[in-house]
Amino acid sequence: MLRVFRLLISGTPSVGKTTVAKKLAEMMDCPYINAAELIIQEQLYEGVDERRESFIVDTLRAREFFSRFLRGIKRVIVDSHVVDVFPRRLITKVIVLRIHPIEILRRGVARGWNIKKCIENAQAELLGTCLFDALSFYGEDKVRQLDCTNRKAEEIASEVLEALRGKGMTEVSIDWLALVEEDKALEILLRVEREEAIPKEIINKLIS
Image 1 (spheres, helix red, strand yellow):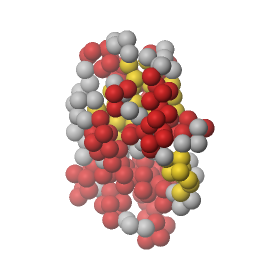
Image 2 (cartoon, rainbow, N blue to C red; image 1 turned 180 degrees about the horizontal axis):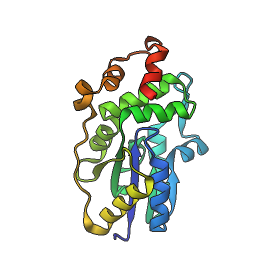
Image 3 (cartoon, rainbow, N blue to C red; image 1 turned 90 degrees about the horizontal axis):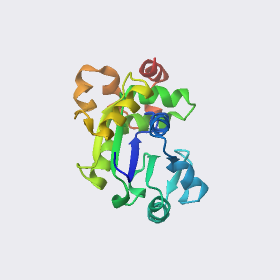
Image 4 (cartoon, rainbow, N blue to C red; image 1 turned 180 degrees about the vertical axis):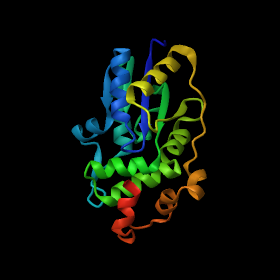
């Protein structure tokens, strides 16, 4: 394994980044960093989006901070769904975790997040937003995606670890949009523009 290795675990909120990243850090005996917690701690945000109940990250300030912060750490697992707050040169590999969009919706609702936020996250996963952002910022050579649907964190972390040890990671193509025609729940999710437009019985059906 490389002497200097900084791995970014990314993906849509509720995909399981934190659980997988912590498990992987434990297996590799290296530090784990939750970027969102550091951003809040260091106040690297421009304000708060009250509607989405989330912080608006100051990307430039965050990137300057992580440039200094990560430079002194040789091996680390970083967890973040915002990929462009890290300098490209300091990130060795990016693993984007993917999971069925309806599971993203279910998990968000189970956490007590507002429906607007849950739907937006599920739609982002449906459209592959996190993967697109990672590929756009880091390029194809550094980015891999992994389908985590119906899989345990230990299994996922083990697969990533084996890949890092040189055994490679199976290339997969994940396109949830290709399932829309045969999956009614995904079709409904794709068409939703506002949470007010969704009857409660539809929400219950989506997450049941």
